[in-house]
Length: 148
Length: 148
DNA sequence: GTCGCTGCAAACAGTTTGCAGAGCT
DNA sequence: AGCTCTGCAAACTGTTTGCAGCGAC
Figure: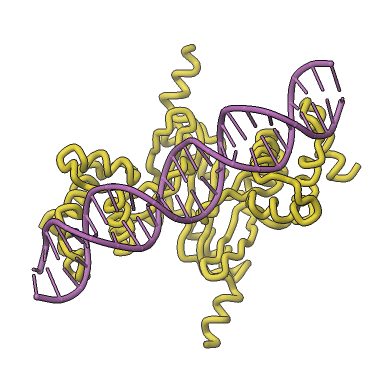
C-alpha cells in the first residue's frame, strides 16, 4: 500500500470524509515531501490543477492533518506556519535555517535525550516535546560571500 | 551606575533621543526583569502611569531595543513576540514551557556547543544562533493532575 | 529651530469563522 | 437523505506604517 492510500485510510478510519480537496492537499504534500510548505504554498500548488479550492479549506485540512498527527506544525519565525510529515524520527529531527537564503536543512541528532533527562532530574519537568532550530549561514552562502 | 542609567546611556550613545516613552518602556522591563513580556504586556504596564502612550510607540521601542541587542526576541508559539533582557549567558539559556499553565522556566546548558561543532563539520553550516525550547508539564501541574 | 519621535487611525498579513449551498457515504 | 465539508467574504489578531503635530537636544 502506498503512502497516499495509507493516509486516505487514516482519514476514513477516523470518520472524516474523503473529499477531493483533502485528497489534493495530501497529494501536494507527498509531491513535496522534502519541503516545509505553508498553507499558502499548498493553496498555490493545489490551485494549479483545481482552481476551485478555497484557502480556508486548506487551513482546515492542515489543522485536521496536524490533529491526526499526520503532519507536524513548524514555526521558522517567518510569520507563517509550515508543515512537514510527522514520521517516527521527528523527535530527533531538527532544522538548520540559513539566514541569508532561508534554505532549511534537516539534521538528525539524539543528544537532547540526555539533556531531557538532566532537566527532568533538576527541575522535575516532564518533557513531552522540544523544538531546536539553528540559525546561521549555509555553505553555499558562505562561498557567495567570500567571492564578492 | 545602575541598570536604568546604563541603558539610557546606551540609547544616547547611539544617537537616539531619550524620550519619556522610551524611559518608561525600559523601566517596565527592569521592574519585570524575570518575565517574558509581550508588546501588549508592556503597553498595559506603562499605560497605568502614563495613559497617553501609544501601542505603536511600544512596538517601535521594542524593535529599537532589540536592534541595539538590549533585548532579545522570544517566540513561544503563542502568536505574539515576547522579549527578555539579552545578557551574556543568552546563548546557553533555554526555556521550558509548561503546556498546561504556560509557565516558563529558564534553563542553562552549554551542551549545544559541541552539537554546533558537529553540525559545522558535517554540513559546513556556520552557526550563529540557536533556539531551543522544551514543552512539557511542570512539577506543579503534574501534582495537580494526580490529585484529581 | 531642527529633525527625530509620538499618537492616532488605517493598513497589513496570516489565520479563523459564519453561513448557505454542495457532495461524500 | 443526512450531515459533514466547502467556498466565499467578513472578522480577528498581532504588528506595521503614513502623517501631522510634539518635544529632546
